[in-house]
Length: 415
Ligand code: ADP
Image 1 (cartoon, rainbow, N blue to C red):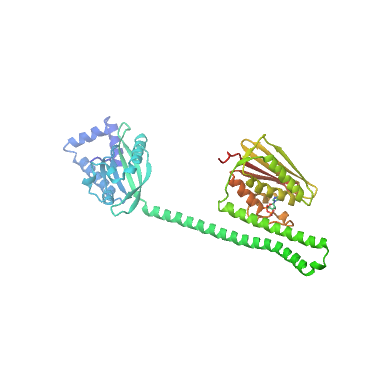
Image 2: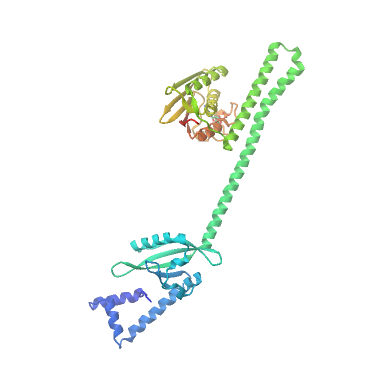
């Protein structure tokens, strides 16, 4: 059975061989042939027995095999683990112990050790006869001959099944915790959502009720103009509530991923122009609203429902957060395969430290509290932009206005 000499004995032999101008092998051969030097034989035998005892008493699995996977040595732990006798293992390929699908990986590992005998670490699972799966971490070393050639590989296997199970348990627990946190956050968001929305609905409803009461009780005594004023207020508040409901539905649709995306040939410049005209008509603060389009002639494939949601929110914010008489500019251009839309205003702007949060649901910057809003518009914009596969950015100097820029990839039309 092949063995290695313990380091101390090997070093002593080497020194002696060098002193005598001979090799270690010649020295041993000479001593073995000499009847009178029984002491050396005894020392060698003792060292071999001690070495065997150490290896055999290891709980780790130890084996040696030739590069073509034939086992030349196995310790007791190895035999016990694989439930085979030493005779059943020695002289045979250890591949019989591994499932077929691992063979290629094992060959790759052997090739690596042949190239570089340094330790090679790999983890393999073993299906035990009772179906239990165990995980072994193998550390392989190449055993080299005097020419530096790897002639055998020594492998030490450590059963890491319990560690692995603990690790799996830890990962499962972490995933469960993450799920719980996400659920808790979703619940909190839902609660905040419900209370904000209820609050926002209550406002228009109470205005509607007040005007309706007035009309019911005093309508006959009211002038025609006063009646019309109350009716206009009711219609305005119904529009507000309908808009809010639309926002909630839009949010819900993007959250549920049910937003269908249908690009069709569209006249983007015409669409932007009519949007600007709509805002000019409805803007009672009389801003200077302009559109500038640098678009290629002809139609561009786009989903106008998405564009409408995105631009309506950005434009109404620009109007809402800037003083009467200031300018609001909508621009559209095609750049590097994207439709680029920009809404620019000269309003209150957004505090620097809060710019990163304005796309979060319900977030409202501290300088916007005096303006009516729910903090949902930009969430809807972001979700629509992302569903389109685009991106959005904001730049703003507080007190000097804000610029929202949206990049939407140009798409092919639906068939
Ligand atoms: P809302 O306007 O209803 O509050 P949004 O989600 O549309 O909700 O906007 C979130 C916040 O971002 C606003 O409350 C405001 O603080 C800020 N914001 C958005 N657009 C502008 C803008 N053009 N100028 C200044 N602040 C803006």
